[in-house]
Each structure stands twice: as C-alpha cells, then as structure tokens.
Length: 62
Image (cartoon, rainbow, N blue to C red; front, side, top):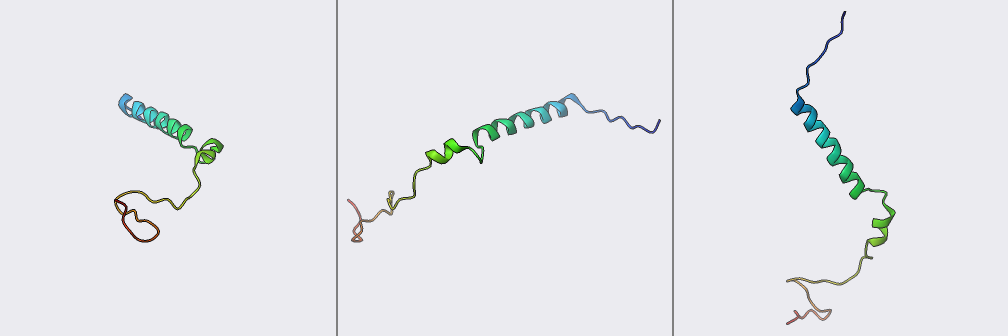
C-alpha cells in the first residue's frame, strides 16, 4: 500500500540506454588495463619536430 510508482518517460529510458551503450563502447576502446595498448606505446625519445625544432648546436633547421 505504501509503494510509490514513478512514471519514467520513454525518452528518458532511451537516453539512459544510449549513455550505457556509449560508456561500454568507450571502455572497450580505451580500457586502462589493455595490454595491447601498452605494447603500442612508443618509448619516450628526444626527437623534437615542429616550428620550434632546433639542432643540438642551437641552429634552427632550414
């Protein structure tokens, strides 16, 4: 007798379902414990590229 029933609109249920699905996809792609992505990471090097790149003697490349 003391139960309360809440009406949940279909749009709200669909929104919640889409959020759950998107989170599941994100977790599959960007899993923090993914051993494959750990192997793909390149080691940190000393190479520099871009507009501010300089040679070791301080001269800007031409």
